[in-house]
Image 1 (cartoon, one colour):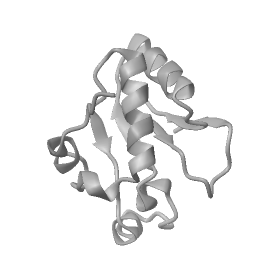
Image 2 (tube, one colour):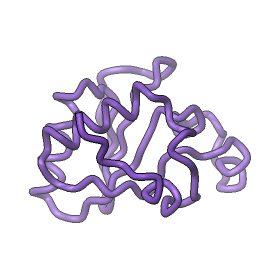
Image 3 (cartoon, helix red, strand yellow):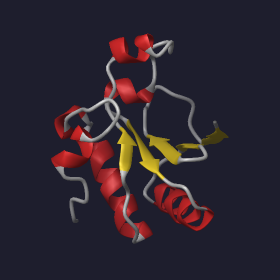
Image 4 (cartoon, one colour):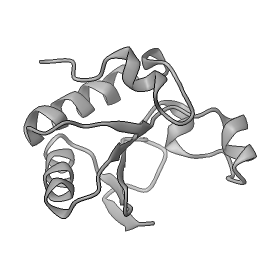
Length: 118
């Protein structure tokens, strides 16, 4: 399987992180989804520290803090549909949809089989 996410993608995230911060199985699942979608996946956020989350007035329990999540830039409905369908086919069961990105995670500690909007 292709590796569609170079280290530079993670360094450009907000906040910057490292590819090695991500869970290997989660990254494999994102690569599979990218392959299925056939369109670029541009991460806007991936791993985030608990401290970062708390600075942003969040509880620090996000799937991002364990390397199980990624937000993918998306601003048009056609790409959003392709991304969501590919994420589902790749096995993600936790998806959040926002105006400018699609969130997906495979945290085993969070509620499964949900899609939410921001």
